[in-house]
Amino acid sequence: MKFDFYLSEMSVSDLHGGGLTLQRVLGNQLNDIPCFIHVNRFATDLPASENFAGKSINLPSSWDSDKVRKVLGRTLSAKISKTSTMIRQHARYAATVINNKFKRNHELCALVCPQGANAIYTLHELQKHRPVKYITWIMDDHITEFADGSWRYPRYIESILTEHLRKAEQVFVISPAMQEFYKSRFGVQSTVLFGSSNVVEAAQEYSVNLNKPLKIGYFGAVANWQRDALIAVADALKGTDTELHIYSGVNELPGDLQVDEVHFNGRLAPNEVQTTMHNYDALLLPISFKAELRNMSEFNIATKMSEYLACGVPIIAVGPAYSAMIKYLDEHKAAITVSSTQKEDIANTISLLRDQKQVSHILKNAQDLVKSEVSTEPMLKKWLSVINS
Image (cartoon, rainbow, N blue to C red; front, side, top):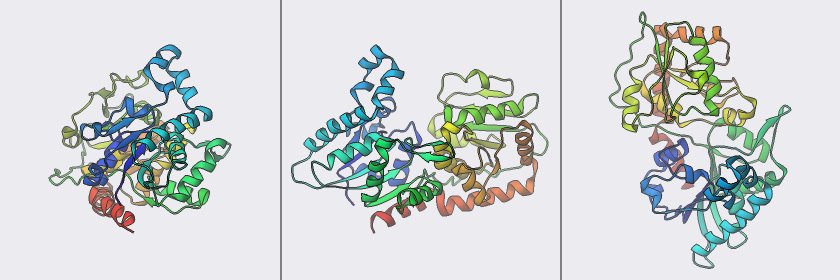
């Protein structure tokens, strides 16, 4: 399938998991797309990599412009831009721009990666101008929220999202949990495709640390989706000789993480990450327990999970039992997991790193999983088998 354009709130950036996922899984096919259209501020803040910058068209809402944000403030500007009225208005504008870019009476083909309502509404409005065939790949569902024991969508978006999913040529989702949910909620079949990792060909052999103090590494964002789990781990390490080393692009750690047992090492160059991972006894995968972030925790699989699995160092995953990554890793017995924020539970889980038999078992399972599912080659094969059908 030849795409005329890519449509999303996010750019194909080297600075976030979605951009890396697209580059790793689609490879050269992504380079063949002539136009990358971004309909949200997200792509302005995390711009496309240099390979795609020259083919990118940024169409954020006027409410998200630097000028308006300076006058109203970021919080109020973002709040206004997310209202249903402004989303619809902006979608009509963006659809007109896209329609005018291509010759008349020509059916278009698009790869759509919705992060929210902007891309979905823009496509809906574009289809009023001309026919558009599309494949949709949902990596994050930022629209739904969990409240009073059930999932809810804003009234203005659920019918449009249902139409979007049902009319797509193919639907890709980021996790088995999202696949099951979309089937029950919207009645659509989908294919699971998430962030891959290249196989580490010359990874050094892992040796279980039986005597020395343990060192755990974390490589990734320090944002809402990780923060409370990171804080729980830091709290569990207080007064112990186990260290947590954090590598992230933030300028400094929040105060809750500034404890003696936590060391902040800044950002690494991409080519240094996997080499540095081998300096640690385990890699930490933190997933938020917060109810307001349940849509991320329950449905999302981070690109970092695949990178960790491919590294050859055991994973300690800390997150709620309902989270997609905890379920996935438990199902394949490919990590040490704990679904608790209690100090004792986390401390007991960390102590399992001394269990040579268990560590060897999970590393073997992780290696098998990388070869069969989470490396780039099997993910690309899955993508090609679906779109070529």
